[in-house]
Image 1: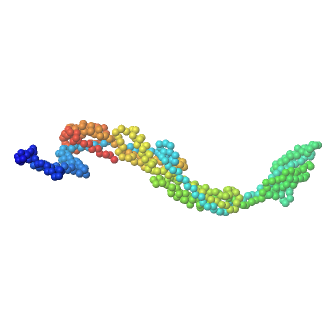
Image 2: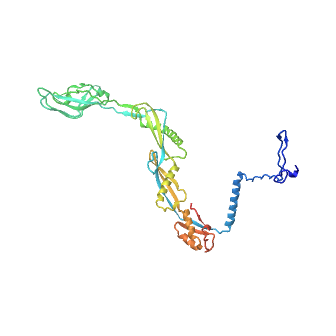
Image 3: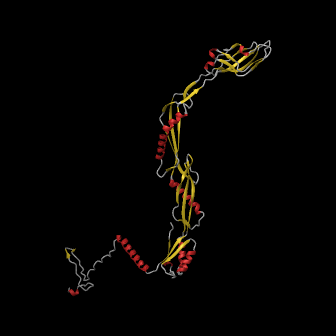
Length: 425
């Protein structure tokens, strides 16, 4: 078949017939004259880490544009010096180990006790005791039928120069057939001394000294109480005091040193520090002794308090007290100052009375909404008129306006006005 008679493709070219080799298809190729399309490259995006950098550059550019714009816009500042009040006073507080009221502050009671070693000393008290008379009674007997009298100071001699002396007159009643009349009187023995302690019936017989008839006399009971003169030593208070003077100061110093060592950081010891010394002897004062053992015990106590805590409590109480008398717009300009006045009085072993001087300043405060309202009120007004209004507003002590001169009109745009509050410290 002629090539012109061969089947043609859609493009007009003769269609190639497949080649057959041993019954297998070797190849079948369609040749196209349309050129192949080139692959399209994908768009590249910036890396993620560069996003914050790009955002920062945009914000910086916006800030610079705003500054350029702001320089061309006139700004007016309203400067306000707010009114203020000053208050001062004093608050009485108690620092105690057991605070129970608002006017009490926490404190600690410190106690220190020191005891010395025993000191052996000679007793120095001297007793010179005079001799005492033995005393008793004499009984007189009257057998006669008539009464008889024995006068006072009738003396009856005894052996070794001792004698019994009656102390008062006595009348002896008459005797009867059944009994003898009798009467007793007090008597003592001279000279004084232990030998006057005679036994019963040492004097017993007719009384020739009575100057009566048939009168007899007898000491029916022993005489007693007679003592010889004595000189001996006793424990005196001077003995204890002398040891206390020698040992006490050292003991007190040790006790105070211990107290100071127990003070914590921020604390102070209240004054005065109470110290007392007690002296104890193994033999009581006034007892007979030649040598005694004495020890001294010194005890000191003080109240430890925190001045900062006391001042803070006083400032808080003072602030609450002043706040009740002020306007709600008046606020504390700075912390209340407080310091403790002297002297500090110890009202009891575990409490101190402290007087705290306090003072503070309260200023009138304009909040944000009030400042915005003020700006809107003054916008577009002449400067002098705005100043007059400012000076008549409550809470403003002094005011000025910067950014306009003379009696120029303030900007009508509130955005071009700002308020500056001058704080009062």
